[in-house]
Image 1: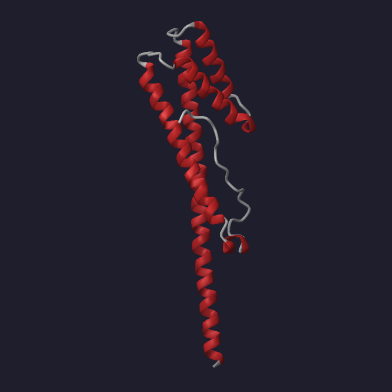
Image 2: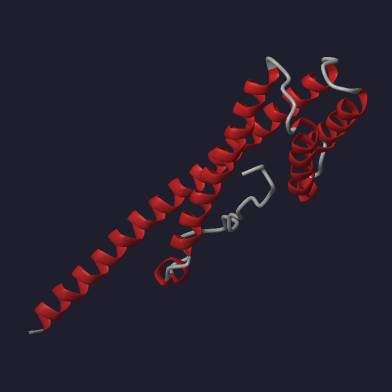
Length: 162
């Protein structure tokens, strides 16, 4: 009788250890994907700022629009981390305000593609963050401290024109 109980306890402990190992690996992979998605998003923001600055300096816009776009692009590019989302949103609004209804060939297609890639990168990042946070909210994950000391990822909330 005691032998069966001992075997049952060992099996339960082994299953719990297997689940914990699998979940910790999954959580680690999700955190890595969050970091990769964040880097991709930052790259797309940098491309957008560079393209807008190049467009502003090309001489195809009126001087006021050029100055507005150049200032917004510079502020977004040099923003400190805690103010980044607001300045990137301001750049989005500046693009919308100055280029709505304006056809600036060959810039229009490239700028539209860049804006679309920023939107997709933000959505992809936020989807991964939601998945990671959902896994971290499971009781066993928090009880067993499977996330370690990794900070809780946060979504990116900015006006990207979508």
